[in-house]
Length: 147
Image 1 (tube, rainbow, N blue to C red):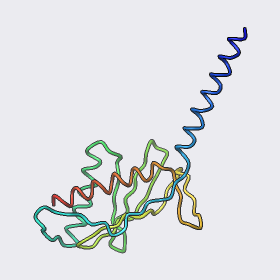
Image 2 (tube, rainbow, N blue to C red; image 1 turned 120 degrees about the vertical axis):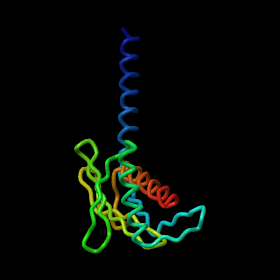
Image 3 (tube, rainbow, N blue to C red; image 1 turned 180 degrees about the vertical axis):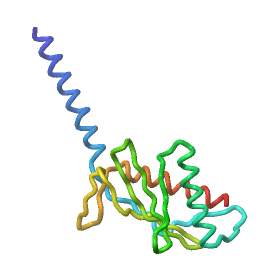
Image 4 (tube, rainbow, N blue to C red; image 1 turned 135 degrees about the horizontal axis):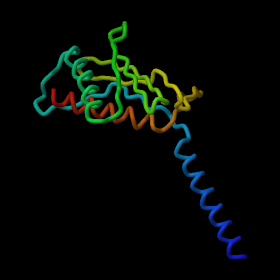
């Protein structure tokens, strides 16, 4: 009977560790904004601001077609783009995408069910936000380098 009790304690301890590590992975982290991101082109071709904006829209569509998270994009009244993604019909993320002829920025706009909080140091959010937005930024840079 003592062996059974020891096994039960070990199982409870292991389950506690698993629960703690899962919770730690979900601890909010600082939001990463990508400001004035640049890219390189093998041919050094210069693009116009409109060409950059079209390439950004195309990158978002290609990103979705590749089976990545389905970002939706719409123009805003100030000439920027608002990109929104919904994950598992639960988590929603919105970012503003702005650009010039030589750089672009992707900045946190808002979210739902992402543990977002405003702190004196800035916004914190679920760590998956930074992964999703980082993937989007990489897709945009890849498209711009090929456009």
